[in-house]
Image (tube, rainbow, N blue to C red):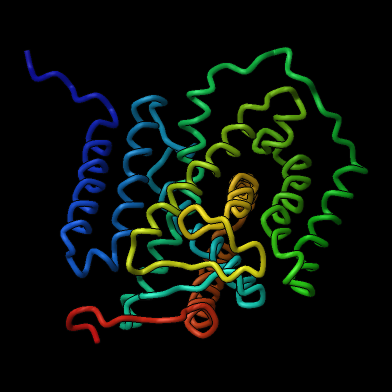
Length: 314
């Protein structure tokens, strides 16, 4: 008899846990470069662990069944988060301290960090949905008619534009604006990909898992950032105290709806991508690359507060 096959997911779980342990140990030991890269190393290790858990529990990961689609999720995650970075140039809700002075390394860090946002939310939500188990068939249903969908779309545009006019008072609205814009489209064109449609049909687990995923990822993001040398700090006008790590307590209320936005956006992107021609995909990819480089410049100009030399890269 040959060796017993390794259970799926064991390798990424082991590698991810090893990465978390090594990152923490090097940070505790005072390794200079780990202070700069701790967040990237530790957060990427968590993502590998949760990916392995989903492989073990579900036989798949956050939904995409192919390696190409996993990479596409990470790829589109970069401009997705950069959309919020672009808004932040006006809102001025957060800033970056202690990033590498060398632009090539700093921009590479932007790309890697932002590529993990969508995969982390969706992977964590899949694991939580498995934990929630079967949905109750007696769950209440919600009627969503055309009038409510039009009202949601109008509200989404208002929630997106009003903070740009009065950022001091209405900045939290950006964390719910996107799903108000995308969910009506999904309900009309791809209802099974809409967490709101599933909820309306008495199938709430997808929405619940996303809300919990946002809370889990939010706490992990903030805790890892707190110990990192290269980090973000909050400059929101209110409230500043009390805090858990760098984030004011009330700020944690934004992570669950942000997870809903992530799921809505990615479902919208997947269906739009599937219907696009090859030429349109190439043009879209070029546009995304230009957009990303442009927003990197904007981050350096408006959001980056301080840099530090890194070894020979000064």
